[in-house]
Length: 238
Image 1 (cartoon, rainbow, N blue to C red):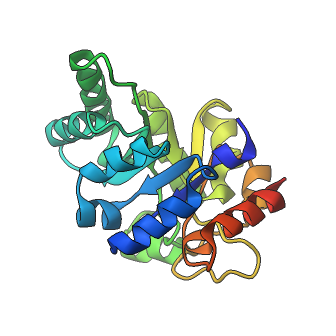
Image 2 (cartoon, rainbow, N blue to C red):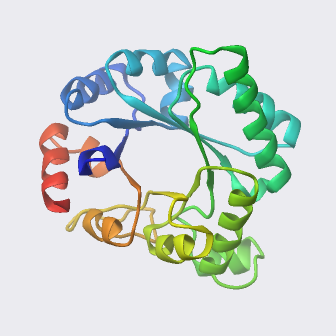
Image 3 (spheres, helix red, strand yellow):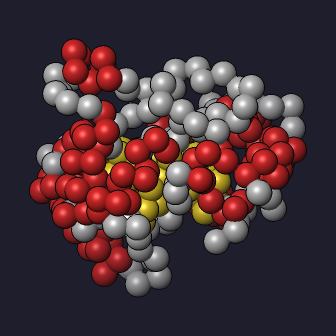
């Protein structure tokens, strides 16, 4: 996998004009894009087929978190949309994650044209810090320990990997295996504000720590030339 294939550009916009500008600028440069709640709720399921038609691989970031039966049906439905990566919240537990995986497999059985998407689990959001974990969520211990336990649960459920901060990748791979995928948001090139992200690294540092994919949004999408910003980030990572 080339370095540029490891970068997932988060298309977090609500305007069709802004979306078209981004997509047209990044087409032929970026391989992966992320469709999050903002984009999906604005444009609906058809946005996936539009992006796939332009040659992008799509990470559909809807973070399924519900009772097992609902998680299964939801995963089945979004698998049929043709996403390449989908996700659940690891906080839903092993039974829920297994149900979501069953939904993916059921969709594949019903439509042989589909390719199985990677199913990954969100551990702790990169906006969560130690104080939030302990005093608001009432989860004892360190963020690292909580993330490791969630990663173990995702592995036990048969998932392909997790979403975590780059800061936890090394210990995750040491614990559950080097082939367990780590997709890492919270990426900020030098000189870019961290905004609401609290556990962040630079793109180059994220690769050094072992991230399989890194998610970058505002540093690319808010720049005057997204294509140029993307190219500069890749150059810095090389």
